[in-house]
Length: 272
Picture 1 (spheres, rainbow, N blue to C red):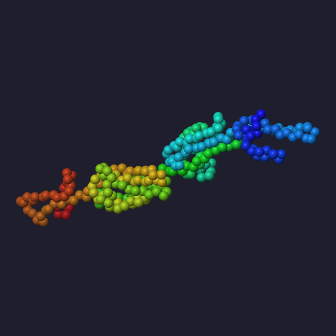
Picture 2 (cartoon, one colour):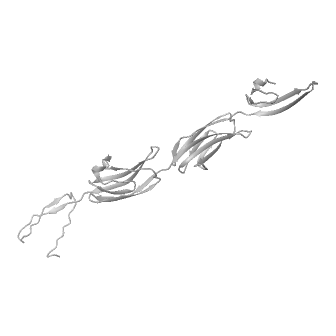
Picture 3 (cartoon, rainbow, N blue to C red):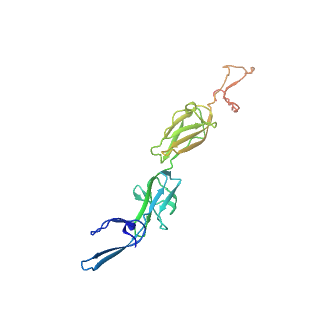
């Protein structure tokens, strides 16, 4: 036998009382009353006291649908009791691909949304101890657009975009001329918005358009057009006198910016 003070905190009177056992174990509590004749009457009750299990859970605050996150648990007084994992999305039971044990593991959320992950341990008496964490899952935005493989400096290029999971995001456009990103207004006339737009390249060269998006987590997504060759508008002229004779040689000289491109000459006589 142990003293009442060693066994529990609290006080028992003739009417009973409230007590809290100090340590884990099986206890037998006995109440005895003796009448005026010296006869004793008693009642005995047995109870088993279980430890209080502590469950803590570590989980990132946010992730993306293309990544897995690591969950970690810390258990106290759980012994070999199993951890039961559950998940909710927007307050509705949800499922996610995972590899979870009592110690934690990895979870992959394939759909965007606000999730709650719960780790729960139920002891032999049926009491459940749990810990929950919330995590916001962001989608992977996507932008598709195409540009011609070749244009001239006087061509207007129409850029049409198709946007996926771009809610509340803004597209920032960049131009690369193979020497790195350049000042937009120096090389391009016109602006592009989320839906695209119409632009004109003002200088000849080889370019690449890049659409860039930064989401709420700070993650940057980049989408490229592929190479577009911008050719100059060629200028070609030559001088020819209005009159001539069959015995006179005319010196024809060309002018322009055709470089080494060959010239194809044609001739009409008397309008045909």
